[in-house]
Image 1 (cartoon, rainbow, N blue to C red):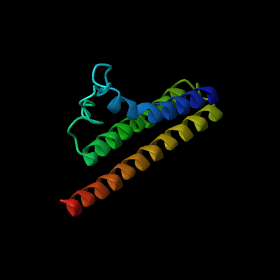
Image 2 (image 1 turned 135 degrees about the horizontal axis):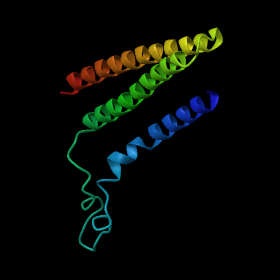
Image 3 (image 1 turned 45 degrees about the horizontal axis):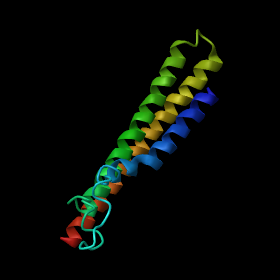
Length: 128
């Protein structure tokens, strides 16, 4: 069980680290990075027209969805362990702890999403 938890945690950390690459690597191609003599710096990059707030919002939503999936997976893993415990009190206790941890994780993720949404909405209303 510890190996599965370590692998899931490692996968989550890698996904969070490389999630911003999905937003930046799509805009940069080999044909528009180089500059000719008449262009100024940054004109051929084609970085997109999304505002920084929209980019941050979509990044936060993507991370929250990914973390939510991990938390639901932990709850499901706890349920699976409970169903396969065959009456062993030790395994049932471990499964209950997993399910409780997953539920607490979901609560933390939802509250973090709500707080970040509130802050971004206030930032938009102040700057608009």
